[in-house]
Image 1 (cartoon, one colour):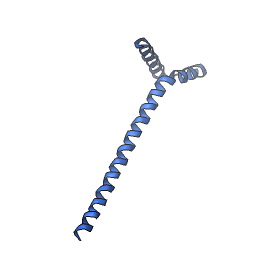
Image 2 (cartoon, one colour):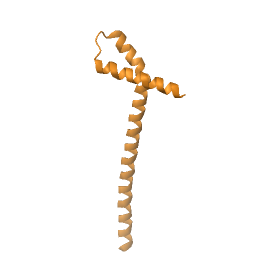
Image 3 (tube, rainbow, N blue to C red):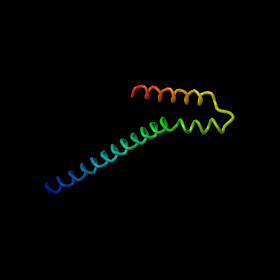
Length: 81
């Protein structure tokens, strides 16, 4: 009786550990995906901005400001290297 109880408790703890590992891996993958998306938008967003500015007659001021700040940031990165 005592051995079977120990086996059952071991299985339960392994199940909880697996759940925590799965949640942790999911959170890490989600964080990496967000970082990759932000870096990709930072680098390739300049091309997207050029397409929007060339085809759209009206661009909101805040979007123009953000794109200028992004271009300044990329130029500062170029100066570092």
